Image 1 (cartoon, one colour):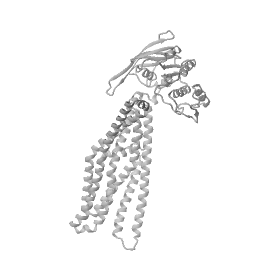
Image 2 (cartoon, rainbow, N blue to C red):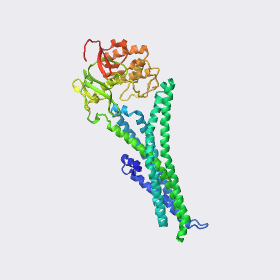
Image 3 (tube, rainbow, N blue to C red):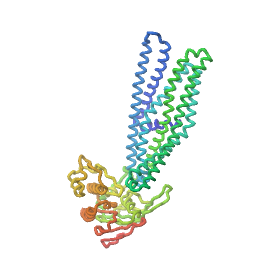
Image 4 (cartoon, rainbow, N blue to C red):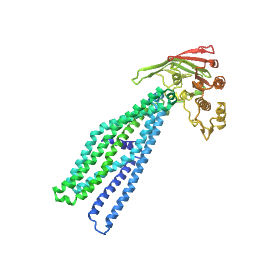
Length: 555
């Protein structure tokens, strides 16, 4: 049963106001007491009712308790929503901050689907559960107070009622472990289901062109969905049994009070109506408590998922420490990047290596144009991620002039780069840039020949619904505005038409060199190799010099 109060533990842990939970619990007590007093007042007033006589005393007491119940109940439910939304809001922001500080390689392995699922679906479960669980807490208090009232009326009836409640609890506990296990499996399988749905949306063009592939993807979707359905049925149906049996127990209790106890003693004749009313009053709260166990199980799993995600992000936090970052003096005026025995390897879930890059030894001069070539899967993109410090090498080092990179100064090195990788993202705002000249933005849009496709108004690009080539041109506009020292492109020209591809290699890249920039670009366009200083070739994770237009071997 301790497991069932995880949401309350979350309240205590996440609430900024330590007394917030106590205040909410206090109002819950008042609401429950007011509701229970209504039972006592109704029973007492009904016992003293007289024809054509309005009992003003009981009427005023009833009205006062009703008003107290309405006011406190409204406050409790309202505050439960406000507190839970505030908590989820803080957790979302906190996890978002941890995501941006996560190790990039580990974040790739973690997967976007799992993060989206836990920050959306699971967060919704928690916020929707909060008012229901608070109401269930109130129902428990009402049951306790009502049982005290039953004990006041009849000790024997109290013992019997208590026995029925204990039997209901034991029956629930018998099913709870199996039910919770199935619900947890169902929510885990939902992540796989979302992943398959993502395949359908992200791979729509591919499945549209291949009937067999389309059928197999849908078959996976069907299998995932069926698994989720069956697990949820196994998890939710027993709760229906719990509800039915709990109600049956209490109807049996009412039958005992009405048909059995009066035959045992004449003293029960005076309280049988009051006892029956009290038991009927208890049935409602007990039903709510039994039903809430379904919500509790789902909210417990959702909270575990959210905190599990946060724990995983903490475990894979980037090695940099923002508070201890050392700025490399004159980093923008560097002359040489030196890569020494840099080695990286991908591993499977068991930690076994599946592909490696390196060791690489390389010197990159300032204002140099370098093209990187190689077949698919040769390690080109991995090299770019290592070069830009998105990935950390297993061993080896990078130094900027004579300054070796470390976790204390690595951000200064990263700030030298503007990157457009093959899987790039376009922001609709120019984040990280201040005092933006809209006229200059328009000039760059015109330079990239997309001024008729999108604009820049009120601090935002007006249209991001562009072709892949146009999106890359817009990304290039952003890199021009960032005006970093080193430009990194991963197959940037692959989606451009022949005219603009030529324009990119023969006009834009030479212009960057004239402006003192360094350019490292992955390409397959061998007809433009003469526009660079060196061509490096990647093959099975190894790097060699393919062409040196300066006739100078630097590797």
